[in-house]
Length: 280
Image (tube, rainbow, N blue to C red; front, top):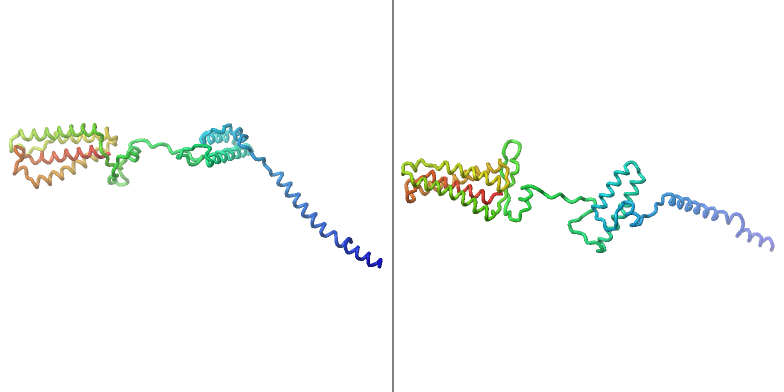
């Protein structure tokens, strides 16, 4: 009976039952202990928003542009110091996330034009090209044909827009005076002289004024102003010739006026006027 009790006791507390689970637990404990020590070595304390702001030298009310400018300035000073660079980047991330949190929760009023902190705002456009693109009055955009073998004329974008009242009155008065001068001059001549009259002086003055007003008042380049003026001259001459072939003022005079050349010149002056009024 005593031998049986000893055998039973050895089955529960003998050396064959205890060591194996003991070794397994010890191995698991050692692995956990090593991992925890490694995590402690790599642990970096989390920055608070106040500490991050102090590192960057900014306040909670600083804008995105101010924070970004301060960070970039400090990074330039810390060039070569990897630990300082990492500290600045970590501080910037904390400030950035805190600012984004305030934006999401509605604590900060942000303009709708602001998109991202690291994206600088687009510079405003300048010059006549920006005025033509942003002008609300433009009703159509044309493209002049390319001039030359390799490309188009600079500033060839062409817009059609109504003129200002002051400029319209000024241009209409000048072109109207030139057209009236040509008609009166031809009317005062003899019928035979009218047949060869072309009002060359008035036509030259109208062409010169067209180039001037497009360049000065519409801020066009000289080459573009000359090209548009010549285009208005050609269009007016074609229309005037077609109407003259239909009316034949040299055969059927309009009162005392019977000069076909001056008749076509009047259409040329009107064509120049239309170009100066509506082309920008």
